Amino acid sequence: MQKVVLASNNAGKLKEFSEILAPAGIQMVPQGELGVPEADEPFGTFVENALAKARHASKLTGLPALADDSGLCVDALGGAPGVYSARFAALNGFEKSDAANNQYLVSRLAGQSNRKARYVAVLVYVSSASDPQPIIAEGVWPGEIIDAPKGGNGFGYDPHFYLPTLGKTAAELSAQEKNRASHRGQALQQLLPRLANRLGQ
Image (cartoon, rainbow, N blue to C red; front, side):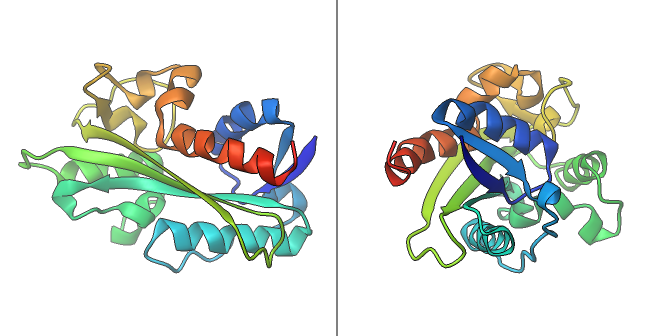
């Protein structure tokens, strides 16, 4: 198994990545287990933040690293919360939690008829901190925001992220269904063949 540092301590992401990458012979190790502090994410785009996180984790561990920067982009909010999805409520004076983020999102959309949104994930793999050719993959998952939460699976905005084509929210999908359809699932499926090629598999 090839050890790769996951530049995140998010248990939900670790589970999703491990399930998809394990068959390819890749063992994901969360950066916290290796004593890596969270990297700064000062940039306004998903790709810049993901690259910064991957280089940071690789530099401090000497291992290849995989980072994901992902979030929810809501049309009626001009693409917000975007890269600030995890801190959306906290940046506006509320606690930092999924529940607070969801409440704040729904309050911001009160009276809005346009509920279109998309989850975006950008994955960056670096073989070393100075890798001149990082592998970058992107996935986009379109949906709509609903006021009342539905479903007990997933994390983040999943209970409010409704998928018209499936008639369910992301939180009502099984892990297998979500991995097939989600923004991260799409990005990982793009990443896998390129990663296998890089690792000589």
